[in-house]
Structures are given as C-alpha cells and as structure tokens.
Amino acid sequence: MPRTPSSPLLLAGLLAGAAVAHAAVPRQFDAIVPRSLPGSPRQWTYASGVAELALAAGVAHPRTRKAAALAAAAFFVGVFPANVKMAADARHRSPVERAVAFARLPLQVPLVLWAGRVSRDAATPRPADRPTR
Image 1: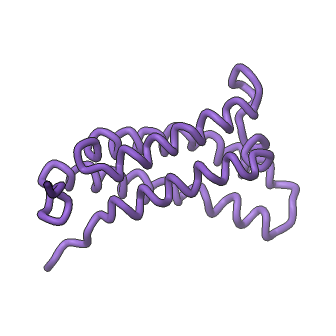
Image 2 (image 1 turned 45 degrees about the vertical axis):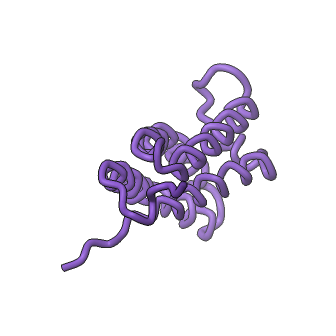
C-alpha cells in the first residue's frame, strides 16, 4: 500500500499562515498565553509568530527540512499549554466557543505526528525535492 506523502510545503504553509495570524490578530493569541510565563502576553504572541515563520521557512527548504520539522514538532508540543488555557477559559463561554476550544486539544497530536513524518521523509529526499542547478 502506498504511503501518504508528508506534505512538507503544506506544513510550511500552515506554519506561515499561523505566523501571519499572530501578527494580524494578536489579541486572540494574547488571551491564551499562560499567565505563569514572564513578560507580556503580546511579547509571547509575537515571539511565537516569529518562531512559526522561521519554522515555515525551514520546513519549506529541503536542506533544512529535517531539523526544522523536528523543531516544529517540539513547537507544537510547547504551545500545548496555551490550548489547555484556552479550553479552561472557555468553560464559562458559549457552547460553540467551548467546542472549538476543546477540539483544539487533540489536534496537537496529528500536528506533532505530521511534523515528525516530514522530518523522517526529509532524510531521503525525493527527486522533486532536490534543488536544480
């Protein structure tokens, strides 16, 4: 049975889109920054957006894809506390907001697995991924 491609450029696009969202609508991300982190929530929002942009660039480039995808997997694990905070804060909100907040929690697992698969696949570049001269 053929294996599903890991879609590194789709992962890079997802990360880049998230980075843009952090810059365009930072307020929604500020709200989910855990209070226990030092500094202001806005600093964390912008820093995570910059990290996502750097990860997107790394995943998009075949030479840096393996390391960047591993870093993306770690990043997805690292931002999980923000999703937990979002779910905890949504307990007293509308049913739709609660559903969205709680649905985000298990979504981290496929993101981590996807980034791991991109990293593993990067170890053996396919002809389409090799740069041309």
